Image 1: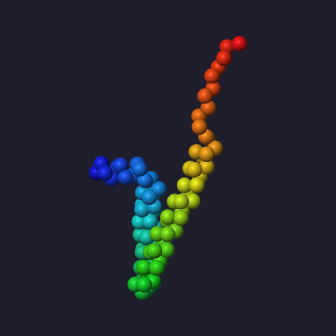
Image 2: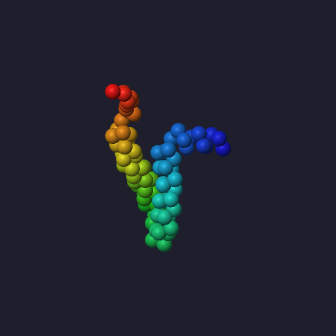
Image 3: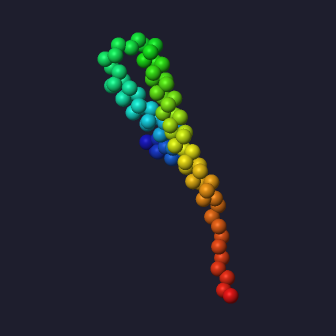
Length: 82
């Protein structure tokens, strides 16, 4: 269990990708269960869904990177008494 927690803290984007992929594939399977897709079509849709989930997590991660860049290093402000 500690290994899982360590992995989640070290790799939050990969963890988000896995969780989002599972949810999106579950929704896909539930929505298309009565369509009558062939196995190759199912495989293509599932792979495409996993790729879209990864791209979504990556794009959302851009905002985090921008926030860190804008904040920059903390400034050392020293007050001088005049």
